[in-house]
Length: 141
Image (cartoon, rainbow, N blue to C red):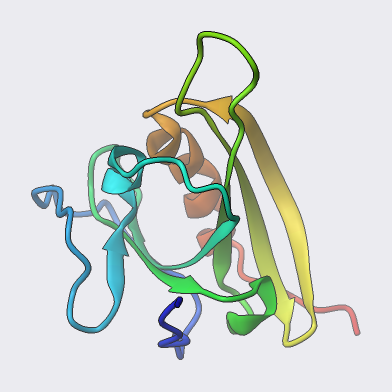
């Protein structure tokens, strides 16, 4: 079962960020260290993470809540989805990562997709997450 702490604020950008030690356990309030997610075996199910805080420099903090659906995040939140992308053959453990920007309680726009990524995907995704956090959602509705 996925815990649903539902973050109460949009993604928080930390300039430049703090070089915290990577953490492999979930905090009591449900925060995952995104930098260590590639250490977990690729799940056959889609996993979704609402980014709570991200440092703008490589290797700095990158925290997220696991959520049940893209629309569970408040507007201005970057949501990362992680799906097993194991192609047949000798490349185990690859994932496809997609970033969405939550626009409203019923709308999230895809902003990037990275297919067939290995262990470095959090740092690859960081740039897009930082950009989206700098440019919060502006609904046209």
